[in-house]
Image (cartoon, rainbow, N blue to C red; front, side, top):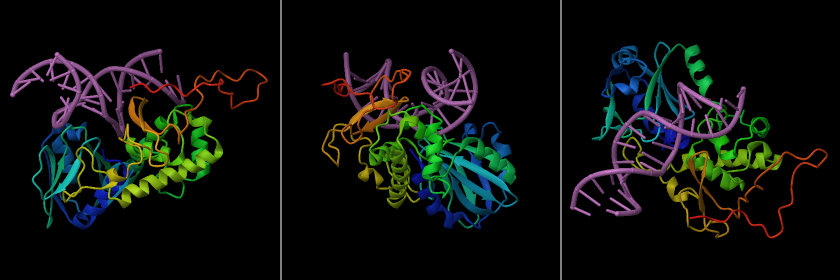
Length: 301
DNA sequence: AGGTCGGCCTGGCAGC
DNA sequence: TGCTGCCAGGCCGACC
């Protein structure tokens, strides 16, 4: 599933092929792609325009077209862009002057193309959906601290919320939490300051490692030239249930957090004390002593 | 207002 | 072998 590193990898592959070229035709084979616009309306709005830049914001690939028209492509779960290769599940084809046909392939048909006309419309669209960009200098420990203080949701769900931090998906959330040694069920507002700092660094490091490895190839993700990324070989915990944690050897467990498959080493990432009744009046907050002999919830599986 | 849950969609796989 | 049914999951909209 394309997350920030996979989308960035695609962008880097594709940019030299499309920037400066004219988009002569956008062939929309599946009308769902263009909703709420009709396919013809979306095509008409972009055809004939030159691609000035291929950008990215969060998990969106942003086609910046001449005359301030923007096509926002979201690959969702299974979307892939393939250059000049026979593709199954083709939903859209991009025809560019002097470049091979680019095919948007997407078996589950979740991917979307949205149109923004004018830079204010683009900013409004993205601003309503996306929070801070993880590689932006604005993503500071102080910024993350402020975000965490405002949310009691489990930190895993917190990381997946694109309106807070843009671009982190299920893979990189698991990997970042493991790097930061934080349990995914810990409420965001219960992170201690050093943990927030560690989490910020871990999110950046996990995403950077993903970009470095040219993304992870699981399920359907491919580079535009069909090559596969290698980050899946570097997963520390994600999709490694039953395998030993690379740090300590404890077997990685799979949990469900916020409805998502979540992988964790519960030795490196100790479970938060469960049930947190509100602190009794006058009690010192924090650190209720676990009952002697109590163990973190028994593994079930 | 913030969190939770169902729907979208279909390939792949477990189970019979 | 072949069928059924469930799971995956980013995001949105409905709901509480």
